[in-house]
Image (cartoon, rainbow, N blue to C red; front, side):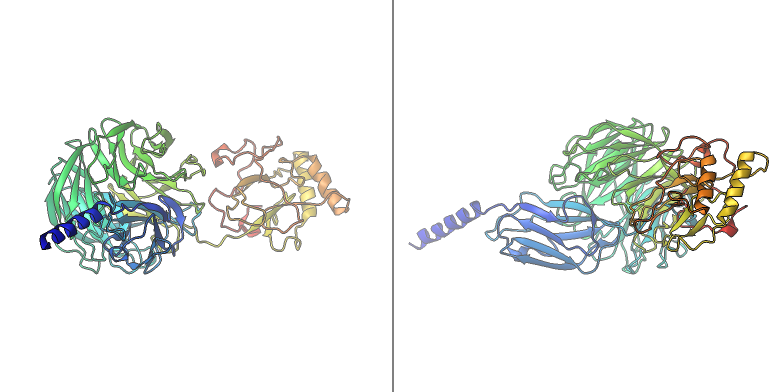
Length: 640
């Protein structure tokens, strides 16, 4: 009887195990690839069945910030709603990419486990940014910087910089002084000819470590953080691929720790180095990735809750995508044509449809290839957008605080970065360039000065330094308007909050215009530029526009009708009021709509052209340049 009872118990246990339900994730908050997530958000997961709350803990519910590393928080499970919640110990930083992994250690209340780990990404919001940057400030690095990464290495709440220096065989770390300025570099030896650097909490001890891909020594270097922003001696791991040029981190096998992947230039492969759980790396796997891969990026491209791989391939002018099988192994690559000599690749949801798109920077064709995701990890043909001369590196971030992700590329030959603003639908406006040091091979976008908008930093191969460009997005805008008909520009700008106080000396404007039409005085109305403002004033966003300094009627050009309007205005003739160019005025005051003005020609609402395309015939008299929207111009600043 005892034997039969024992057998019965074994059978019951086996039956219970066989019939344990496999839990599924019903939804997450934030959602997969969600943008503009509040920095004080909690992370929650809704399951389809009741879960064993003792299995939901910091080892199985793992949250990492791209620049802040492993994040601490309080984890709770609510049985009636089947919701597990991660409440971060502090706010996320602005504009950061956050990754979350649920490991197979999470079980249902009856002992069922996930069939595969579950991972997803989201991006936090920014709070500022006008897509304009202060002049670059440079900081010395090592010899021939190739790559740059930003992370909080000393755990003081601001973002520091790490640079891989190819010719000095070291990595430079520049600690942030707290305001977007940086202390002198400390250099740490790595392998031979490091082309790429990344940073992550590889040993899960709460601080951020460094890893470099070293071309000539055919290895990677890992330097663990001592906890204070200094780093222990390097540990080198030979790579089974040949010629590692680029390195990235992600939890490819979903076990809760961060693995590393390299793009191997000489062997045409990517090599996955699996984390042993303590920041050491054991088993490696190599996968074909196309000829001469020079850049690698990790993200969930097919929306199946694991991390895939994408590479940019120098010689064959293409990119490749390797989809994860769900266990940290990868399917055969799929190639997509790129421009000429792609050097960098990144992924982001640029059309805000919930999946991740790809972008590659192409040196010789001087453009950015944009690949929109079809929703399943396949991609539409590339759309090319012009950049500067030989773009080496490309990143995505919300630079203008409008809720979508813009692009920025560092350009080797033109010594600048190109900003391409998103039109809101995954298409991009013409690039705007900002000078940096010589031969910027790499760019990184992050909130370096802690003011909630996105700044830029480049690694400059030609000048052995880094350039930091601070976003001007937190400057309080000065609201101003133009008094229509102010031909002599004695008071062309007045405070919008007090638009009726003058003095305007507008009688002198009648004389000015009369003399202008006499063609003997040399008096010439000027074409002025009002840069506008994208903030939501009561009248709505206002784009930049041009106006003629003697246009009293708002037709878009200067005619004798403007003289008549001003004369009638002084005679108080009904219907001859003088309106205002500007915004932020309560109804029912009137103001003219934005216009593109031609010299005594027709006006009309058209896009603002660059300065070099101003209509012929207008004198070159103090045209405010694009980007000067925050400058209040007073009469004393003008040439009369």
